Amino acid sequence: MKFKLFPASTVAIAATLVTALASAQGSGAVAQDKAFEPVMMEPLHSISEPVVQPLPGEAQVQSADAAPQDNEADTPAASLAELVADQESSGELSSEMRCLAGAIYFEAKSESLPGQLAVGRVVVNRSKSGRFPASYCGVVYQPSQFSFVRGRSMPTINTGSQDWREAVAIARIADAGSWRSPAEGALFFHAARVSPGWRLARVTRIDNHVFYR
Image (cartoon, rainbow, N blue to C red; front, top):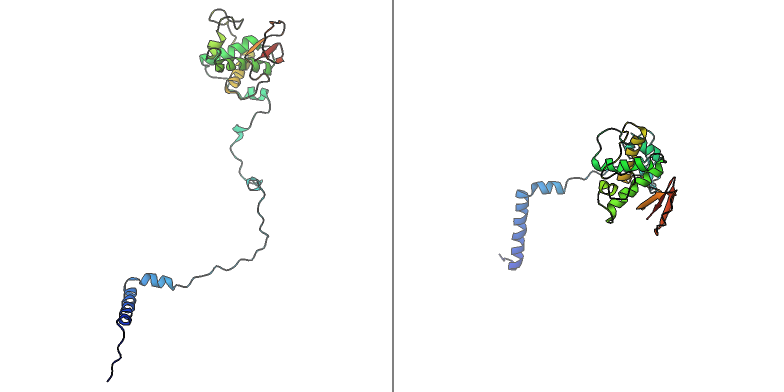
């Protein structure tokens, strides 16, 4: 009997294949099962409507039945009068806010709401300018600035009056900057009946006051 000799490399390759098959049956059964597990294909759906990319902003449009968003408080006021009416009318005022409201009350209580706001914003602007005291009370009580000030005090205020309630509301608006004044940026004003001859940039006239930068 003749034996056919195989090269050593061929025998080694065969041995390796046998070992790999045995190993796959012992340790990789789960993987093997998953490899041959049939894949269920999703049935194709027919397209009954054309697919259209929404226009920009279209996705934000809510249907009529959608629940309303709780953002009514963020809705801006339609007018300065409406914003004044929305201001909190009760509660204690800080000394700073009382100084600001007092300046509005004594300088412009008989004027329109924009005129009162313009006076209030002058006090606010001065406190932030670096050229005047850095507080509302410091601005109001700075010597020779406001004619209603006597020393370091104001005259008595009728705090139960509509004029005072309005001045407080305007002070809150001026402090928050929640409504733009028609004299925005002004740092000075005087009564329209006088002509001090200031060499300043005139901003505008509102009611009985002329405002300057």
